[in-house]
Image (tube, rainbow, N blue to C red):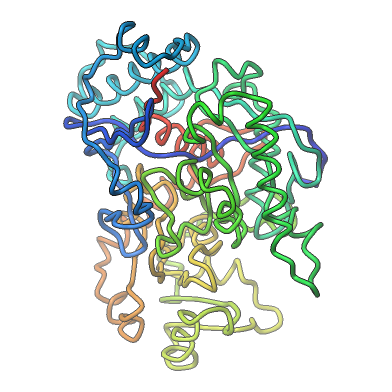
Amino acid sequence: MRRYTRKHQSSLILLAVISIAAASAIVVFKVSKGLSWHYLASPWTWTSSLGGPFSSRHAIDKRKEKAKEYINLERIWNDESVKRRGKHRDGSLEMVEADLAKARALIRDASLNPSNRSTLELPDSDYVPQGNIYRNPHAFHRSYLLMEKMFKIFVYEEGEPPLFHYGSCKDIYSMEGLFMSLMEQDTRYRTWDPNEAHVYFLPFSVVMILKHLFAPIIRDKAVMERTVVDYVGIISNKYPFWNRSIGVDHFMLSCHDWGPRATWYVKELYYNSIRVLCNANTSEYFNPKKDASFPEISLVTGEITNLTAHLTPSNRSILAFFAGNLYHGKIRALVFKHWKGKDNGIQIYEKLPVGVSYSEMMKKSRFCLCPSGHEVASPRIVEAIYAECVPVIISQNYVLPFSDVLRWESFSIQIAVSEIANLKNILMGISEERYDRMVENVRKVQNHFLVNDPPKRYDVFNMIIHSVWLRRLNVRIYS
């Protein structure tokens, strides 16, 4: 049995930035001199906790909104135009942008012409994405292979454990520490040459900052501000990359509830940088055009083997199951109000009886309820996927992990808070044929949520990296 234990490390992490390339029509927003956003059409979109395409009328700085200027993507910045602007050409940046431009074109081609492989032959002997669990399997496959071939991440080495380059791998925030640990060991994406990097990782741990600096009695939130502001100040003075892009090609990652708060104190980090967050709440200005959602996975013991188990649908005698703290947000309170002790088919517990196993209850249930707590993310979603129990997501304003690639509606049920009282009717109304398809899709999507050490292709680590890759593809930085 392989276990994850806490270990000091010395540099790491990648993740998060803006999003998504590949389609026909492209519009560029000129945000500032030398910088433009490419908002591409399908296949990339986002799914909120109620399913369907995500509308991003949020998280936009009003000052930037007023300053937006539409320009043509095909505009050429030649030598003379650069000279007139009084700037020196940045050769390394131009090489990076040339690679990204090629990748955009190839992904767009895979989306529009799925049978055409002539532009670039990239064999894949391990896995070929297909089926309706994906929004566009051809575009995703091409994008993933290009990411493996091209994508480079520079991890700033500044900062010492335990606040930097380190995180817990044995609790509800385990993905924050796991990502840092795996990034530290990575040899595929990580580069030691910052001039060839596509993105730059800020390896501070919100969990560890709060654990070591946040006094529970005084509760001085300024410790977060001082740590993050000082760190950005150090790397922006030592290296040219932050100032070159006003933070757009930089990312941070956090699974803590206060992950978004950690970015408040540096406006470029908040508005421009890629924020990879478990707490992907659009009402708190999570912006899926530049931010990435990743799953909350609770590894209480640090165990990463035998996470999944197979049980046939015919052996699932419980319609729906939930166990958790009643006093953990308004949505849970409504679930308890309407269903605790009201129906034998829907089993709701605040505390399981002695001798009753939580994991076994999930394996005996057709549907596993995943209501949000105080924050939108819930580890129960991934727990349900591991148990091959169809997740029933009850949340508001939640951008689901990897939803620019995955069709969550194909393997989960999303219920509005206003429909909690009608929960049983909704679940009973799902035909056996549709339920069987959803269970099969749950099995298919499991690999994208599995934790492996070392990482395996298409697993959760690589899916997080892919989310960052997509968001870097969506930005162009002019030299």
